[in-house]
Every structure is written in structure tokens, then in C-alpha cells.
Image 1 (tube, helix red, strand yellow):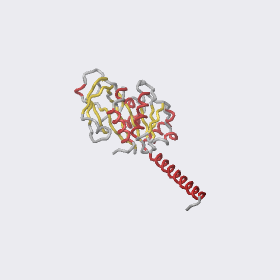
Image 2 (tube, helix red, strand yellow):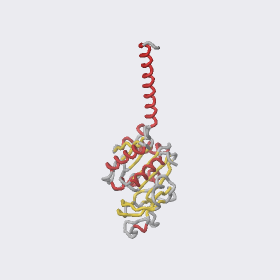
Image 3 (cartoon, helix red, strand yellow):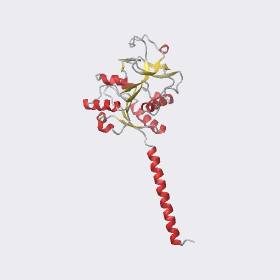
Image 4 (cartoon, one colour):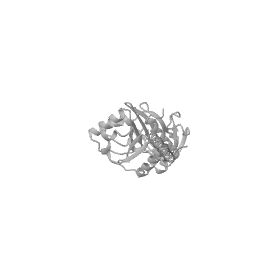
Length: 259
């Protein structure tokens, strides 16, 4: 039989080993739980949407619940610089107007996406940087009024894409609906579009001669992936599980997690 002192030493070694094992397991688990970080810019240099603070909380919660990303919201445009962006895998814009970016910041933004990072534009991200053509090329088009703010029917154009495959082939939703200029469906991959029979096309604010109104699409820029959705003006839309899954899976696609 072991002497009492020897027994104490053995027990101490056992618990020490157990503690180290538990700490190591915890460290590994914590490492596995590290999520890609997204910088969510909500700076308004034009019209300021009332939904912005609400959207910040929803996007943060969606990232936590899905485990797919970590969203850090900011109004500070100065954070868009090469040094700060090293800590992020993607950018999310819900912005308006000519944002106060220096030429150096603009280049850092473009280089960031070109290198293989992600860009996600929500609603008025297309109402941004009209005087910077390269941004329009990246996002795919510019806001050109919103003829409708009502219940509309939206059609799914690519039912296989993860950002929309959970949706019905067509579905009704109430939101502010954009039309776009400097936009061609041949230059992007359209995911959602407006069912024209659900709206009045004779409104004076309807400008598109082809009467084609895309609502969400994807694009590429260098090695980067771009996802844009025009939905998201209303709090009710941000609270809608259909929109939430649309946004989360669009982000996951842009991050390269979903094919």
C-alpha cells in the first residue's frame, strides 16, 4: 500500500494533469469558436435611415446565433484604412451619400476586396459614392428613387443560391423598393427581382425603360465576393426570419463559407 504522503503526491499530480487537460480543451474549443469579423459601417452622409440602430443589434445577434460571423458596428469612416482592415474578413455597408474617404482610404477599400475579402451592401449601400465610379462597378449599380413603399411580390431568380433557396419561388413583403441606374443584369448575378404585376408601373418616378427591377444580387471584384440586398428599410423586415436567413446566408456566401 502507498504511504499517505505518496498518495497525496499522486492525487496532486492527477488533479494537476486534469486541470491542464481541461484548460487545453477549453483553449481549443475557444479557438474553434473564433468567428470571422465584419466591420458594419452605418455612416450617413445623405439621408439617415431610422432603422440603423435597430439593424446594428439584429446583425450582431444574427452573427452570434449562427456562429458564422462577428459584427462590429461603427459610424467612423476613418476606420476604413489598410491597417485597421487587417483584423476583418469583410465589410458591410448600410450607408448614404459621399462618404468622407480620402483617396488612400478608397484604395485601401478596393485592395481589401480585391485580395479576396467580402463586401456586403444592404439597402442604401447603392445610395452611396455616386462620384466614385469604381464603387458603382463593385456594388453593381446605383439607387434611382424608390417608386414603391408597399406590399409587393418578389421573385426568386436563382433558387439554388444559399441566400435565397429557403424562400418560396415568389413571396409577398412590405418594404421600400428601389430601382437602379448604371445597372445591368448581365453584369451581376441576380438573386431576387420585383414581380411587376404587384406594383403600378405608370408612376412618374419609374425610369427604367426595360421595366426590370432587381432586388438582390451577387458580384465579384478581383478575388472578393460581393453580396447586395435592396431589402431592409423597415424594422419589420429586419425582424422577418426570411430576411434574416437571406442576410446571414448571403454573408456566409460572401465569406466563402457557402458555395
